[in-house]
Image 1 (spheres, helix red, strand yellow):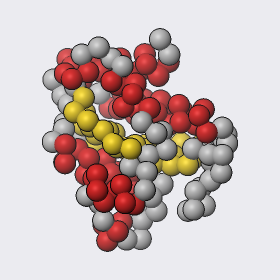
Image 2 (cartoon, one colour):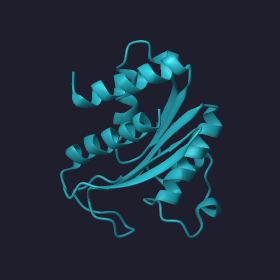
Image 3 (cartoon, one colour):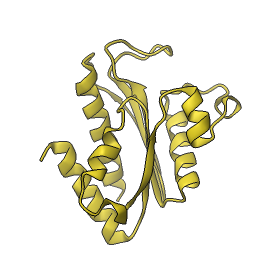
Image 4 (cartoon, one colour):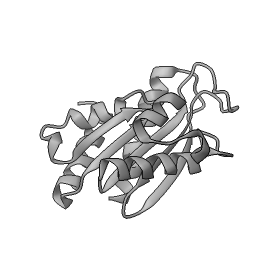
Length: 158
């Protein structure tokens, strides 16, 4: 079992004990947060659903965030990640939501963030956001690090 799978199982157990549900919106982690959570046997007891929100078109269609909602906001920022987490939680009617948005690499994003930059956020009884800088341009390693950071943030809150 990988470190990510162990962390997902730990988070899952806490959610199950608390009888709370989780939804996920992720971007540059490419579905790894959801995959790790869904690898936990009995995931339907805590996982509602998730989406890879990779473009503005996906953002509008999947989480109902239009261009006007993000006016003056950078997509790989803490305010944006919190908005994404809140909207995901509301739309999925979950107790908790995780959001992740960043630049996996090998290059940065159009907002000037370097590869290895992401922001993870949670929305639920508490809200938190955290900016992560891996300092790496290795896409797959960054994707794993981003997923791990998102699950760690939720684990801390639970």
